[in-house]
Image 1 (cartoon, rainbow, N blue to C red):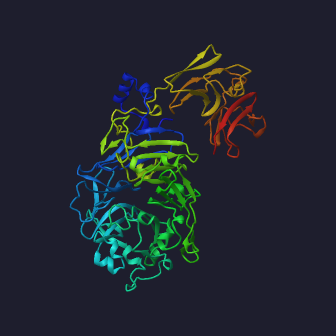
Image 2 (cartoon, rainbow, N blue to C red; image 1 turned 120 degrees about the vertical axis):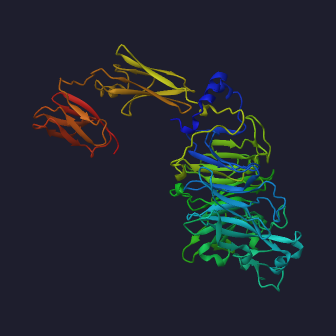
Length: 638
C-alpha cells in the first residue's frame, strides 16, 4: 500500500511524465535528501530537522518531502535543539545570527527557548543571554508542560579561585559553570524559573587546602573536581554540557558533559547529594586511568524510555553517541547503549571497586570500516519503535536508519550549503550542512492525530525521487475468457509484480491467470467453494509498494447444487454470528469444516430463518449442508 507521503502534486507528476523522471532517477545516484529508502524496513514516521545557518524547522517524510515547516525570522538561527510536543506544537531554541555583542560566547550557544503551536503561532518564550548566564545546546520537555534547560552560569576569576580553581587554568579570566533550570510558562507569553540545580554547589578540589571544599577526589565521586576537564576551543567553557534528558519514571536528569567525557545523572529526589551516577571516564573522579575511558566527547545521552519501547529489553537504558573514539588508523564515531543498575534497597546506583557500574557498554554500533563514520561534534542516536537505530553524523548532516541486522532502511543527507538549498547531485563537505539532532516521531505520535501531513515538496533543488517514491501508475483489469479462465491485464508496474485472487480477503490463488476447471491446478479445491454471484477480487502489488485491484462475478456452479432452494447466509464472511434465511421446513442442517467434519447440527422445525452462533469455531472455510444444498461461509478471526 502506498503511504500518503509518497503522493506528489499534479504539476510535478506531469513534469515526470513529460521528461521521464522515472528513468532519470536511475541514471544518477542521489547525494542529498533521501539517498536510500526501504519502505518495508523503515520505521514509519516523520523526522524533525533543524539545521544550523538558517532559521526554520522542518518535518520530512521518508521520501524527503517536507510535510510541515515552522518558519522563524530571517535573522535567527538554531540555538540548538527542537522538539515536538505530544500535545501539539513545537519547542525550539534560537538566537540572533549576529550575536557578536554577547558577553558569554562558545560553541552551542543559544538565547531563547520558545513554544509555538502547529500553525507557528508563538505561545510563550524565555530568553537568557546576559552577563550572568546564557542558554545553550539542549533542553528536555517535562510531562507537566515545563521545559528543563541548560544554561551557562558566569563565574568570575575571584569566585573561581575561592572555589579552589588553579589560577593557572584561568586564562580566560572566568569560568562558565552549568546551571539547570526548569521553565514554567506564566500564562502571559513568558516563563518563570520554577527550579534550578547548580554544578557550582557540588564542587571538590585537592589544590587549595584553605578552601572549604578541599578533599580527596576519589572519596567523593558525587562531587565535581573544579580543576578537571579537557578544555575545548573556549578556555572559560569548563564543562560544556551538550545534552539533557529527563526520566519521568525515576524523576532523574541525564546530562552529557563532554569536557569530562562523562554522562551524569542528577536525582531530583536527592538533588542536594550531587551526582547520583557518572560514567564514561573514571579518571574524572580520580579512579583508574586513560585505559578505563569509554566516552570521548560524547553527545546526546538519552533514556530509552519512549512509550513504544516499553516492551523492549532496552527500555530504561541509556543511549549515547560517542564522537571521538581514538583508533589505530584515525578517530571514529560510534553509538552505544549503557545499562546502569539502580539499587532500590539504598536508592543508589551500583558502585564497585571505586567506580560506577557497568564496566562496559551493553550494545555498540560502529561502521564496517569505523573511520568511514566520524563526526567530531553534534550528532545523536535513537532506538526506534521497530527496533531500528537512527544515527546522525551531525557535521555531515547525514542520517542513517539501520535495521538490527545492520541493513540500511533509510539514508538521508540535509540538502544545504551554509543554510541555502542545493541541487540534487551536489557533493557536500564536512560542516556544510551541520545538524545538532535528528528526531524521528512515529506515525502514531499523538500530535499527528488531527493535522495535515500531506507532502509540500522537496527541500533540495532539482529533486530526483527514488523509484519507490514516484507516483503509482499501476493498473489492472480482468478478462474472463469463454468461462474457462480469468486473466489479469497489468500495466504501469514498477519492477516485478504479484497478482492475488481472493474472496472476501480470503486467498484463492496466486498468479496472473486463474483457471476455472483445471484438476491439475493446486487452487482448484478453493475454487470449488465458490457459488454463482460471488465477487472475486484480483489485486496486484509491485516492487514500489503500489496496489491496484479489479473484480469479476463468479458464474460457475462447480460442485455446489442449489436445488432451486434459495438458502442464504449473511453476513458472509462473518465474525461468528450468522443468520440463515430461506430454510425449508423440518430440514436437518449440518455445518462442516473444510475437512468435512461436522462441527454443528440442528433441525429447523417450522422456522425459515435461523440465527447461528459460531464463535466457538476457528477462522476459516465452513459449509452449511441441508437437503443436497451446500453453501460455503467464511469465518473471520474473532
